[in-house]
Length: 149
Image 1 (cartoon, rainbow, N blue to C red):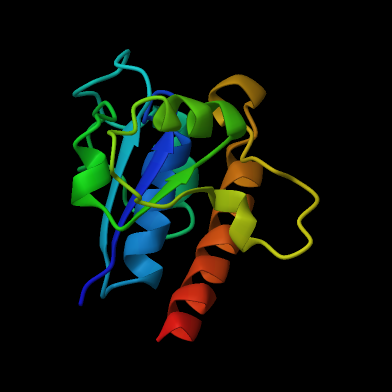
Image 2: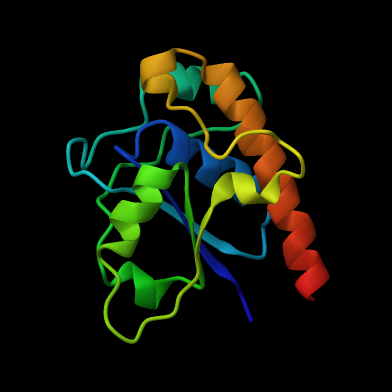
């Protein structure tokens, strides 16, 4: 059975599309998507500097377009991964009654990372630092999925 994973950040133009791109490369047997808790950028491609930083690592985000997270995503996905605590709370606030889809912080998959979130490079301007965390978390996610069998 294919695992369906959704990555969620605020605007779906930096962190979550980067996580989508990285995860598609590392987890080819999974269905991967991304979304934002806000609707500010719906239909837009990932932010130019994030696309450039990802492209420098061999990850092409150009075809992706932002979309807003919606309650139906709890039915569409087996695992929802938030980039920070506020995203996680915003996702949980939309949880339909009776839906038990796990929602976790993406950084939970980085052993001893010392961080509980992927800082938003739209504000920090540290696109490479965000990608470093995303790649580490995606590698941890791959290990966890393999361990599950």
